[in-house]
Image (tube, rainbow, N blue to C red):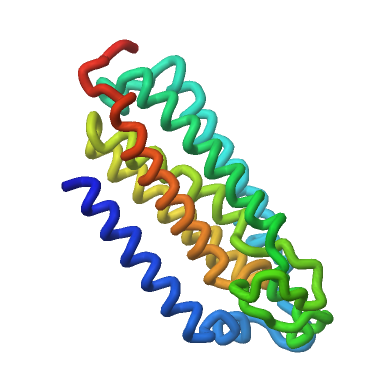
Length: 224
């Protein structure tokens, strides 16, 4: 039942993302915040220092919690076995590495690099693989959003032994992920779809690896 529910959320998320990509709403949103002179909030202290740099520290703190928990379990996770704790840490690291790797393969430039917003690149869909837009590229998907969305693994790891903590963890991931995503779009650093795809990739990767690992994550192994 859980696997089917996870698969349903993955499928619905994919359909919603494909609909968004087909809508051209990315440019509509960015035009709210930018013009031919660029993005006025690009260097604003609240967005560049608090939401961007500060967001990295929040993410780092959460990852430290996961790291410590892998070897010295915290009480909030219930009777989570060692295999699940190691899985949680490993999948978090995989998601943290996966998004920057995808970015390096992308020819898509950021909104603040586009000619419409004062630079030189032209807007090209991130699905136009290999098509150079005249800018620096390497902007899709959103790396900053992964600072939060890479932590989705905690939802899967916690929900069996500590469902209440799992809900709080999932809520925190979504809250900070959306906060980082909106801030980056307002700065012109990413289109909304860049962050949406980061969320989908991290959630889907975590879900697939969770269900694939079930033979190794024995609920009866309560060793701490």
